Image (cartoon, rainbow, N blue to C red):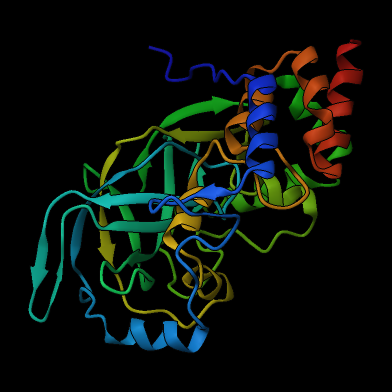
Length: 308
């Protein structure tokens, strides 16, 4: 059975949704509206104080979780939203079923179809803030990483990345050599051997795997079951600190694979994944204005090579 499948996205509808969401403020439960003020963010000092009062699971705790929504391993910084599937407690701490837990993609192993996720923390029900907690995500079989569907990027994209990607494939090849071959070093923001992006383009695809002249990524579907293995607290990292100051509503939005990427690029991970696997020349052409300048150059090279 072929583990790969196509990804279908309506670019016209997505564009309309993006325009609508930009023009209309976010509606919250009490009927009021706001663009970015849902669940007002507390000052950093207050957040740190709240977090320090929350009892967290100790080293070695296993927390049963499921993913809330699909995610793709295109980028190593992709936020992953999960939910605790049963009540869990220990000496001096407890987490109730339904607690939201967040992690970040740290890469994938295309050969075995696994996505590697590092835990960031959980949303405390009393303070409504993200409490930092570090660990790894295991599959339902207890093996490192979650199983997913393997996707190979189209041949035109591979060729374009080699010619117009400014060394992106060479960097991905170096990153892939360490993925899944060693444990996560807590405190290493770019775990699993992934290095800081050396270019804006690499920052958009640094979660992909490139081996044996094949580039690909893994899609993990919604409701995938697994376990969070709690590890020691890390030294503070900028990305984690920044996320700790976001409201749960914004965390949910950022972790949605169908939401537009933050920054210059306006396509979602879902749409980029579709373009790079099954996108037609016409779909690629329609998406050009919504790609970052770096990805646009690669996409234009794809179109040039196709002669359309």
